[in-house]
Image (cartoon, rainbow, N blue to C red; front, side):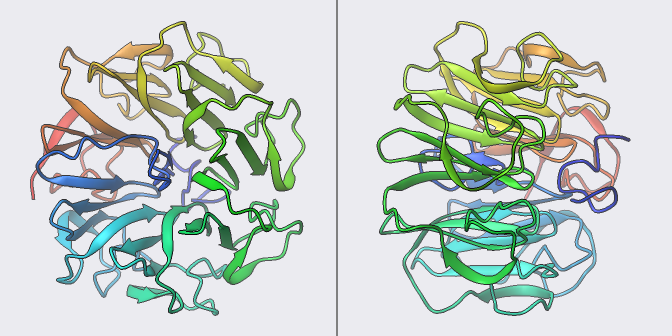
Length: 385
């Protein structure tokens, strides 16, 4: 089980996934452009739990709940989806290691779950098992939760961060934790953000790519393995569109539809056909029809413009969904359907949407697949709620 605890785990060295595991054009760190189908507006699945906002604005969670990260007022795991309160004004959510942050339609910011590093942004380190508003401002526009820390955008394009900061992942020029949101620099041109494990990548309005934080495997894409405690531009290209960050590997899609990857590659998670780490972005294949991307702990998923779903990387728990436990070092198509609209690769498991319904597969030790049991699945299983 070397990988299941590697990304946002609760045992090993740490505990997503936009995560939300990565970023998309709405800036919320999803790594996908949701098709706006019948039921699901947004999904997030880091740690060992899943959070969903439906199109009616209701919020639903399931899976591990040892620190109240499900927001339902207790610390009991849930094997099937349960609604969080009765509000139907949720806009965006992001699942961190063992906590959750969310935005409401009025621009207010909310958090719940574990708070040992001040990651809830409430000015203390007290865990909370129901949603609590962070401050009183109503001008938040995008969020991304990482391992015990967060980054967020306001409507004016400013970048903010708080929580754990040992690797400089808050981007504030030091390694001091913060328990309330603090602005990162003075720039007002941030557009898209995403968090990995102790590192971040972002896109500015001009299409430039930026990274900071932990860099042990070259996941910042800067040509070395040196950590950065302030945002640094990755190359000089100005045509970056979509980004995704995982455990120690990163992805981006350019405006021409090409897919690029860098960082850790022990399990083929970069998809370039090798197991060699890369410390600068390298193009994956030659296809120019990639529409979305998601990076998990050591596995990766993407959707093409035709709605086909592709997977590669580590597969010990069947998280690639192809009916096997065989790892892949290049993108392999999952099934023959062309109806997939979003996908999130999490901590040893995956959640995806097609035709307004959610499907899940992979590791299920805490019920994070939402199927009513704790049985792992190596093919997609329908989540009903």
